[in-house]
Image 1 (tube, one colour):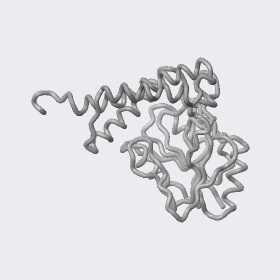
Image 2: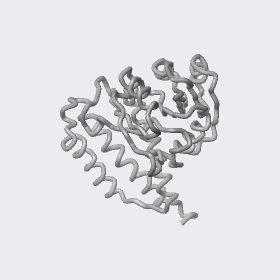
Image 3: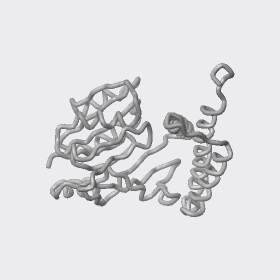
Image 4: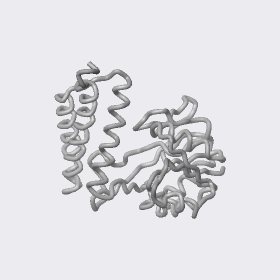
Length: 254
């Protein structure tokens, strides 16, 4: 059955060509850009004519729904620009679409700060990425969006890894982390949720202990320690952002 490889992108010129080179076997590549200011769209058009732009950002979930609508084939493979489909994963995908409709998860192997991270709770990091169009769709979450899978579809596993080149450097990590923290806090505040700084401290400390000790991050060397520390900081920031939004209104808005 034909496959549409679908991507949502913004300012991904650094990654996009290498990603798309691992997707040339797909029957179609569809790219939805969110208003890039670099050469992202030009690079995408080297591989496909199915390139659209929608800069009305309403969150990752909505953007993935829009991207799904660009696909014209029966199967959708959702990929991010900082990911690479390995030959083993490609072969597993091509076999999977010959079977009855189902939803398939893949294992992501992330490269971060100079090494592949095989512990720290980062691997196998299974994510659902292959699914029949129209039978499963992404939800509308601002961040950490998920594929809503109906009960009649089984969730199966693909072989092979999806390589994930997640952060270019420390600045990229901090910028991406701040963006996710902001989106998380916005979503929680819209739901009427509140937080305390003590909660942020507790969750941050718990994150470090879980990643570095319980999830064996120490086996990932210095990178494992750094990731555990940065993740704890990012976790604290989420709760701090929510606390600021809900407890520090100016006098005229209280």
